[in-house]
Image 1 (cartoon, rainbow, N blue to C red):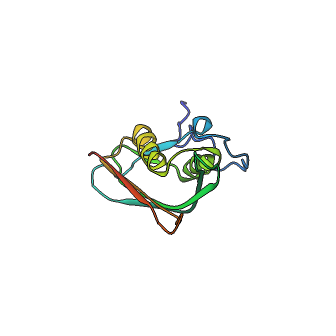
Image 2 (image 1 turned 90 degrees about the vertical axis):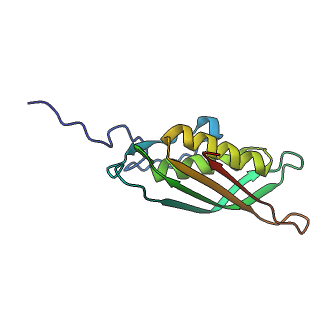
Image 3 (image 1 turned 30 degrees about the horizontal axis):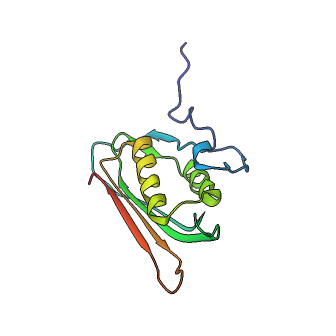
Length: 138
């Protein structure tokens, strides 16, 4: 009798009590699972109101409300790995615009969606609120 392989066997975080966050986005892994509804277009919205990174000039924390919206193709992003991935930016010194574009690039590489938009609404600095939005495909 052959052993049935689960669609979630490759997921390393889901269902485990892992609490150690990656120190840097390079150390994080975005995990994916098969989209059982790839025959239709539908939208997934992921809302992360507690995002933080560091200003590359001052070293001060930048906080943002991130919204990731995508239409999956064959793969979906597993949300616990996404949480760990996004939390890993807390030690990254980068401009807000670069952060949003990096997240878009790495997420599209991981799950190869039909469409994706990443929007970061950063807390005001000097009285100015910065919002950056990047989309795939362009």
